Amino acid sequence: MGKGGNQGEGAPEREAPMPTFRWEEIQKHNLRTDKWLVIDRKVYNITQWSSRHPGGHRVIGHYAGEDATDAFRAFHRDLDFVRKFMKPLLIGELAPEEPSQDRGKNSQITEDFRALRKTAEDMNLFKSNHLFFLLLLAHIIVMESLAWFTVFYFGNGWIPTVITAFVLATSQAQAGWLQHDYGHLSVYKKSTWNHIVHKFIIGHLKGASANWWNHRHFQHHAKPNIFQKDPDVNMLHVFVLGEWQPIEYGKKKLKYLPYNHQHEYFFLIGPPLLIPMYFQYQIIMTMIVRKDWVDLAWAISYYARFFVTYIPFYGVLGAILFLNFIRFLESHWFVWVTQMNHIVMEIDREPYRDWFSSQLAATCNVEQSFFNDWFSGHLNFQIEHHLFPTMPRHNFHKVAPLVRSLCAKHGIRYQEKPLLRALQDIVRSLKKSGELWLDAYLHK
Image (cartoon, rainbow, N blue to C red):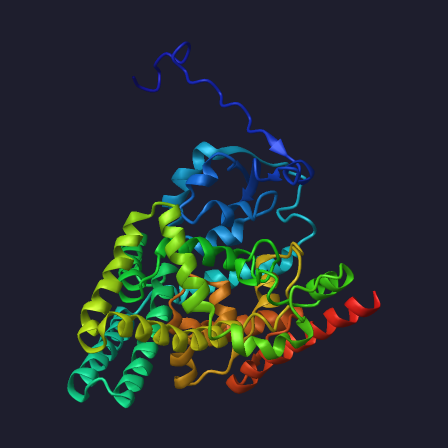
């Protein structure tokens, strides 16, 4: 009909006004069985849906009762696509008189950070250089090939074996950094392609699980260095971290280990054992328990390739020992690099900060150089990586001056240090926490 048609019975009904909520009400819904969160002032009930969340139920649950706008934007590349899944979860919006931020979080810092992110988008800093990542993959394959050729040509004596092990440990470390790029969706515009290549690299090149990594690592990014939310600071009573935990352990007279010596036994059970003992076991058990057969198939393809390649030179037992020696070497590399940016920073209970402040409190940088970039997989730019997880790593140095400027404006410390000092600070931090524990254990 035209404009003069009947507007009586057939006219659509007026939409009912959307319910509004105050922060006081929203913050009550932060339980395992009752989860609400806020994105762009819209209130969503994620209680039932969180178990189907691709990133895992824990990472989204960590923001229950809070504003999750900046975390939502940080983790997802295609926001319009993701919002389609959010529509059925929408239950209302913040009351007009309510601030956009909960618990007195700094709204000016949040506003300035969002403007910074918009500037980075306008500078195309979220656009990846595919050749860069192709070359990284190529140099890993070259190292794998060189390792086999060394044993094939020079034999399985001690010297060729040790050289081969170091080459393979290097390729494993670099594959670890590369899978990290694809896991964060920072290479391809379409998430699907990132997921496919991620499974290939972490599964076929490393023998690990993409889903295990996602569910663990995204929690770390969502709430870095927060006890009971960041799995990377769950030390299973082996170490005490930060200032609050060692004092609590000391007051409660908890002494699972002599923590005042943790900076010493760290060298014996930290770097040497994390990957060959803890991670390797946890990854395999997780895939089996969760019946993650796709990831398990990818992991099996790695082990099959490795043993087919090296059993002819070392036999079955020798190949198993060789694999674990490679894991042992890689574990040192992984632990020192990943801890130099985090374990030395603030580690505490949930402080409910804005996204920018929370990431700066938990991360620090290591000076840029070609070696540092390669050695750490550009995780020497840990601050920028945590602020923008989906940004390709080759653009971190471009956004860093903008981040420094925002820190200076709001009086937030931007920490950057030389590589050697960053590594030494790990030991200093463990020693300091151990001393706090001993003092509390003896005197409180």
